[in-house]
Length: 154
Image 1 (cartoon, rainbow, N blue to C red):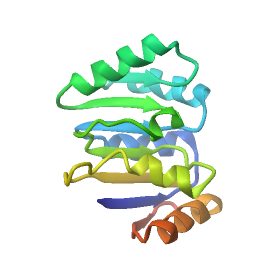
Image 2: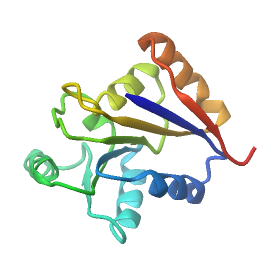
Image 3: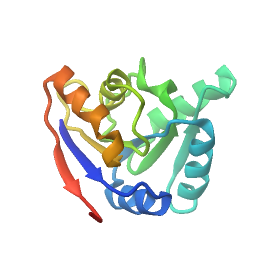
């Protein structure tokens, strides 16, 4: 799996711009809170076929959203919290975007593990600030993986 980490200033508009340049195929975008997931979903829905998934939804709604996302082909985005970082088995996810960096390396590893399933190709993109980079470095050390760092607006 290819991992790319963008070192950015952290402003919403910059994150959104970088993310939309990367979006392609079946993608999952992770945020750290429901509020941020709602906001991002509303914004993305203007330009993309996007679904929203979070723990505040009733179980039947979560299952319906996952079924619809799983059944879609082509460019489709699932905006979610860490609810979807474990236990989801959707084999054709091409791209994971960490719009927000999780608070711990284990969650980061679970998030990016949603792509490149069953020997398929996958890509993980993370938008981070200098103060969050330690989580990604710890995850790389834990998993023995490497990433490419792209520095924007230094």
